[in-house]
Length: 164
Length: 164
DNA sequence: AGATACTTGCTTGCCACAAGCATCGGTTCC
DNA sequence: GGAACCGATGCTTGTGGCAAGCAAGTATCT
Image 1 (cartoon, rainbow over the protein chains, first blue to last red):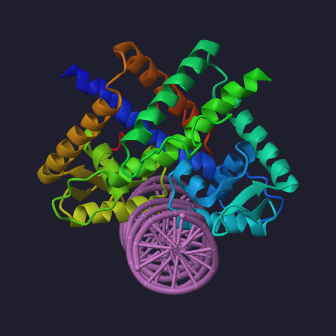
Image 2 (cartoon, each protein chain N blue to C red):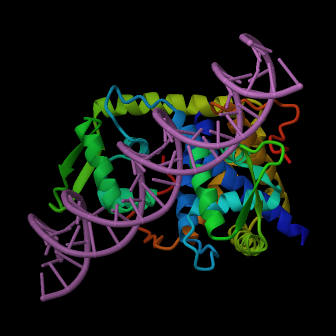
Image 3 (cartoon, helix red, strand yellow):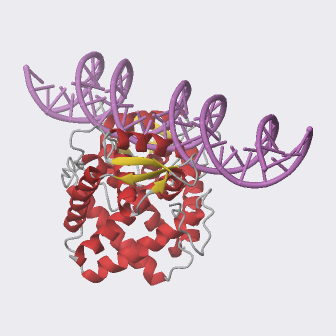
């Protein structure tokens, strides 16, 4: 009974959070050095910059986006010169996407800004709170990823989550 | 610094979470009894059902959506019969939106489903973890809301939904 | 041949911005 | 006192745009 309200509280906060963080994303100034890039492109850029060359398909499963979307976004990143494609020598159907020097700069700048945003947002928190929150959040994402349909993670080939 | 990575970790989880929860929303079956409602309509419905009659403008600030969007979604809800509008007697420009009986049923059903989802997702968590997480999450949303532009919330009494 | 890695065309959901309409509240003018 | 006016407010509607998925196509691998 009252247990309900506990879950309900979380559910409610989640709903609110999604909305708010969407707006947060939207209002952030992304350093794109004048290139007209979309928000999700930066998500991909950061994945690429952090975890080395990716195949498009690997990226797609990693961020839980349709391959077609990834294809377009990577295309945009490539046009903007933040990312470079090389055909996979072992399979010429596939491309390996990797970050360029410019791309890395842009990434670093955005990363710094993003981190600063969170430092600001979590200013009043104790280190323990931050730590616990991060841990629980990670755990939640884990469950979420497992629960989602189409999240057939085959261990081995895909080096998705866990990052650095 | 290592401090960076802590904030970075949270930031990263946030990004991931947004994506995942979008998919979670998308895969959820909303009880709409055959009415073709969009996802955000249910968000509004739940706000209306829980916190009584709302003015559209109050709803908009509450959920951090543009008034035009709210207007359309409420229109859809009204057409679907889940919600009813009455002109505010004290100000005939304004409408008070309130939930209908059917709307309440739909809301309850969705709420139950939503709660069940979270029970499932947080199955492995201890009560303490859930509680802490809920609290921190709430706090985070608070900071987020304050930080967002156009959120000129006064800390005192933030009940922007008096109206009635 | 059949699977795989991607690309491209199309549709849909969702959002914001801007212009417009009705109403309100206060001021001015008679 | 009341009519006329004026800017502010509550909402609606028109429009445009991004991002996501699906489906069909192309090239390549096995």
